[in-house]
Length: 245
Length: 218
Image (cartoon, rainbow over the protein chains, first blue to last red):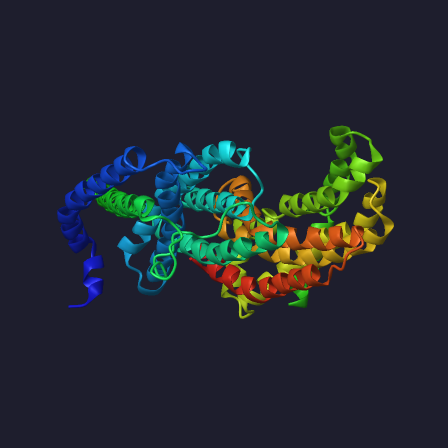
């Protein structure tokens, strides 16, 4: 029994159907706990005031925005190498979620930036790379919807995801040359958290909960999207059969 | 291979091929700039490098959608795919022809247009150099984008959406090298990275584009 058998569409529909409600409930639970805790039961930051609380939306959505692209990259690679249809469909389902998360991260960042930096938008490397990431997502979704043949569409979007990943990374470091940033560096370091405490535990625990909640929300939405894609394909096959008969 | 090179060059020079179109588009953009930003020489000379680079970028984009589209529609592309010629080589030739007919003439004319916008004289040569290196990379990236959208009817808009984000690194380093020269700095680093991006693009992207073309004619 290899792990690939879970990618068989029939099996996929089976197991994803059973775990989906659990993931959804867990995601809702974690999100409510994390966000309510973060918004109402943490002290205001001594310099930033209550605006610091937007972090509970900003950081998790940015984290999903990047990891969604990573997941699309891996799924596209699996499709190109092993031709598992579910994999290609999962990549397709992840793109709109990733785009939404990118936009949430940009919007919350802009709202926070107005009182803190004095401006909604600056051409800072991180902000600019996120904008470029959003453009990549839009192009990817556009290519999926423009090509009629499903397998060709899966092939082409997979290649786009590969090449796009290279260019996304390249742009990420190119903009560093172009402009030194206003955005702070990474504060949420889980790996070396023990050595130095960048962020107080009072803020950190609800933030972790919220990040977990966003991750589960992403998984739920992608599973849901993939399931509806599989169903749509089955429907198309049934329609074709009905026409022949 | 030489036959393809000559055929494509001829096709692009003759009517409807798009040669000259890009240049005129570029010229119009330069003419429109003073109307938009005002005729203050100081402001013009400040934005001149940016405008020239953006203009070159868009002019390259203008003729991209017909890079493979005509051959795809009349079946030439299928013949090329099954022909003993390596498809990667065909793609490379088409990319080079695209560069010879859009990027290179633009780069040659850019110092003149730059002078019209009050570009400092020492930056004139540099903008020609950065443009001629950069547009070759743009043509390679565009070849990949054009291969992706070859089967899409009226795919021009989608093509721009796919290709423009990938133009970002080239634009950053190309314009940066020219700006640094204009302000009396040393452009070596930016120029080296620009060259690296172009060389990597021209060495790898024809393979990817050929793969994509095979997927499209399958």
